[in-house]
Amino acid sequence: YMPRTVMVFLNEQPGLSPEQRRSAAKEEASAALGAYWTALEGTLDPAKVERAANNAIIGNAEDIATQIRERFHIDDRLMLWFDFFNHDSERVQRNMTAFMTKVAPRVNRGV
Image (cartoon, rainbow, N blue to C red; front, side, top):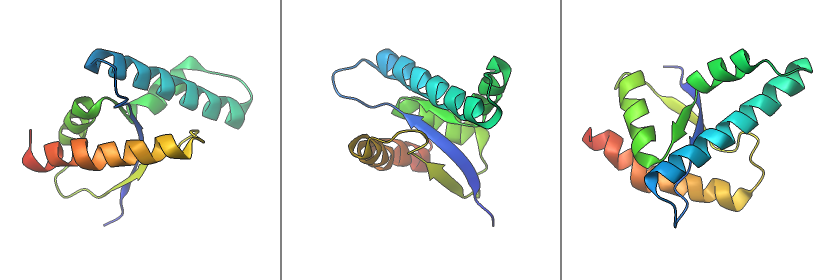
């Protein structure tokens, strides 16, 4: 019953197209994960950033819902990190709200 720890890089910023949100989320994830590995080891290894990105869920609401449905079992419990290297508490709260209003319903409906 241990939860799976998952970093969430969700972008549902108003005024952006779904593709722009997807691209922005990927950029945010790359920057955060790159900073993380650099801090851990002192140098940046692009391969490690790529592997870490494979353990995160990244994109707009539709992307995130699809990744959850494809990568996790229905009985899995997820512990979601929305604040990984993001110190903008307003943005973190908006991402959490977007997850619950736009992602969770899609996952629960299987859409």
